[in-house]
Image (cartoon, rainbow, N blue to C red; front, side, top):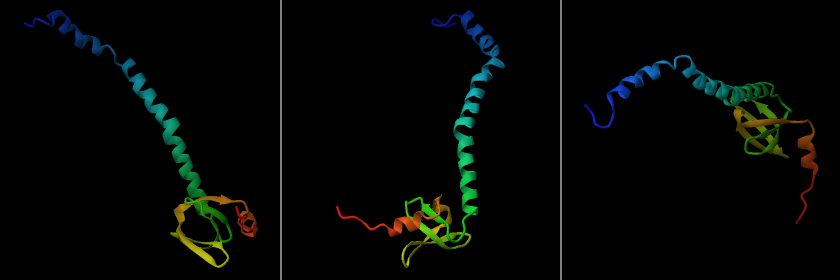
Length: 118
């Protein structure tokens, strides 16, 4: 016999937890649905779009890398892309480091601009 917990209350506790059943699952399932629609699904969608963009890459495409380098695709293979970043200057980057394809003429327009002194 315990002086702090009465025997009647100690026996009633398991019966109360057994009554939850299906109602007890609504909140955890709601959290899983929330995470799926707000985190998992958008991330998978972005990954699919990135993969499609990388598959559509071809010679002459103007791209920006994840490091912010703007260049024109000169050569490409399964793993690497050779970019022309200025006249007779080439960089070889991994294919998955290409972040965005730019509209045609972006590279040419920026290479014609002369830097201004501050």
